[in-house]
Length: 192
Image (cartoon, rainbow, N blue to C red; front, side, top):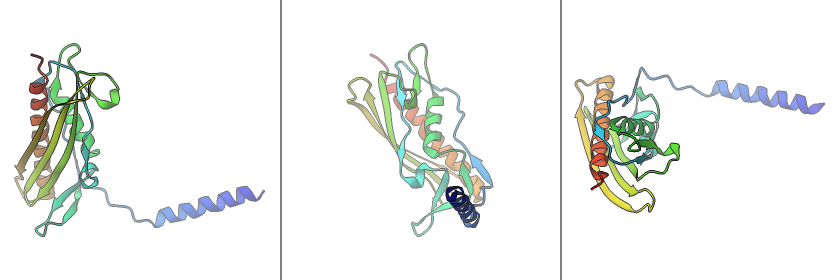
């Protein structure tokens, strides 16, 4: 008898707390890295993992470094999804193949000839310059031994000083990183 009253009071209390928590204003614009046209032909099957990244870089917020070196979120722009997921999708878009020579996300759970594991160490703005930096490793599928490694760094300059122009430059830098990673994967996994 008292249990329904206690549950109702608890639900009412939680509902009141939720309305007190300030909500973040939505971003003025959302950005994505894909879809991109396939540009690199595979000669083997490759699993592409979602990249690792710090929490600052991995989420939907876009970060910028100010003149003192402090990192701040750019509140008026955001990614459409987690930046790590967008980078994985962009890389998968760029890779193509015939038959069993395909690129698959790790979520597919398939056994492939190779696996691409990577880490994004920078995907930020500094002034009007957008920066992307990543480290990638290709593993042999069955043995899981290191096959090849790379470091990639790209940048793009914004065509203006608005947050939208800076975010567009970050899209360009991210896409350039993905293109270089796709070229590395396609070249490294060619069967002799």
